[in-house]
View (cartoon, rainbow over the protein chains, first blue to last red):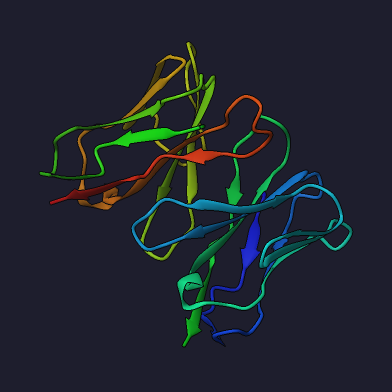
Length: 111
Length: 116
């Protein structure tokens, strides 16, 4: 069974710090990796996606992928209180298939 | 672009009644839509994959006779929860991929179902 694992947290960081969110996946054939942010009672919103090994940066966000270790992470620099939410890691095994989600990590940024 | 509209956003119903949730792709044609369910503090769990013009594919443990999915057009998929019970109370979300948007999924706003 394909699984995506995340530490549920909560992860607490002070404003301005770097928040590091981690995710591991079981399906070695996974090809696409996504980070979504979800506020309570709302649907997920896409933050970043990554397909290749290495880092991908977008503003304050950096996604890191290591396929050999089956590990993907999200770094949030200069964390803001508005970043406080649940971050969902999602994995897709092949084109046209659904995303498999982790349980999410709750991030709390204190001002 | 790539907007997915989902209605209703919230529904409260009595046990034993049926509830229909609609999911529309507003500015693109969605040949495939995915239905997820999320219980409080849990992850999104895939319920079924809905393909236009054919029967939906259900995930293991999801009762196809209870959760009826219809994908009659390229822009509309519906999920009907039949004979709803309190344990069906959950957050239901649809999603679709859009042409030219790669592997990203676009989500509807979700439907919070509460069965009394």
